[in-house]
Image (cartoon, rainbow, N blue to C red; front, side, top):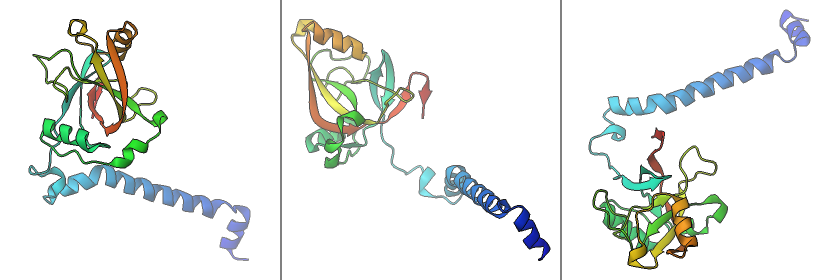
Length: 199
């Protein structure tokens, strides 16, 4: 029996462990290059990734938990909504009809105002009234960029006020001051900034 065979007999797991470690190091090295080196390589080679001519998606102003946030519209399940968002931002929002089939438990909510306050100091929401209100942000349990649009309608002009939290919206609904209408429309709206964080 050779020395190598003897070592294998005494340490039968040595080769599988060494092979596993080699694969792990190779995988981690490739992952690090993919995450940190690919973009730098594209920069150095004049690639599209960092080109000044690369498309820019404009951010949208909204509220979460009483504080301002920024997000982007990337896709919508409904052609009319996609058209409204495209016109609002001057940036194409493609229609992905299958978004409408995403189960409710995989969706967040975005509250969109159909009447009420017209803001003077901030951009308006997609329907010309106050900015949207989001129900979650990165770091919250169940956060997702997939959101069902909930249409918010004040029951009378005198009832309208700026609301910036889901709790305030729900309290106004309980008091009969506004109506909430969950729509079948789903949008992809990842947050760019949120309280305590940003991309």
